[in-house]
Length: 388
Image (cartoon, rainbow, N blue to C red; front, top):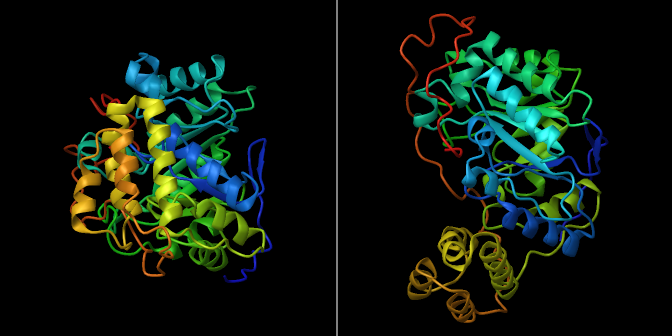
């Protein structure tokens, strides 16, 4: 175990919420549902004695929320003891944004709203959504302002997440951060990649430092290439950012938040779980998914997580194939029992999991780059019911 020294600035204030650890779980489509968030919180309590950060629900589309799409409403499920309840909205239209945020406030659906302007998926950017939208700086400002105005007086803070820009020729993060802060956002977060990078290559932490120097009135959070506690401490030390946002680093490693909590408190990092303890965590994850989705869909969902959990761990090909096809909780239990419980967690079982891909040109609507001050709402960019 390694002794870590926490930075002098370890607490994080987001609106009325004082987080003792400056750590935020990034919303990830198909991952950060109530089952995964509950598991992360349980492990932080078990291994670090507290819940100290912010766990954000997977992204939902503002339009689908306002239309009360059943799948979208199910995605907004929170555990009874989950606090603060944090919900991320994908949106492109100030009017729909206002309606969705007002609905959240009036119906007590969440305690915090995050807004997604960082999705690089082609089906999103080709319609002007996600990471493409901050280029339209006036429209971007109106959307943020609409959300802030809708929750005025409710105590619900609005935060905004975005990327460096569309590509290396079209950086938008400095304008986006300034505009979001001016329009009332309680914090901003930067994934330090362009949309063209997608999830490939290396995050450019120097751009987080630049944003922190540019935006001084609200907290600035950094995201990108944090896979262990040392990475988180290094990002805050090198950039001066106020907090970290954890995405792919926690895939198959939901105990990472306990390690981060300890690191930022200056305590000894908990010993990583043995293979037997990992198996117990997978079992618990499967139970929580079955509770949320039903056993059939829950077991289909656990399959992708199993691949992340076993990344770098000793498990035979036949066992991996069996787990990739698991259909019942009983099958999951039986297969996990085949793992050697005494194997320690290997130091090599770190690094990125999940999607990485390759850099590519960003698909945009025709003429999108012609006028950054155009406030026209992109057509059909909010028809999705979940994030890409």
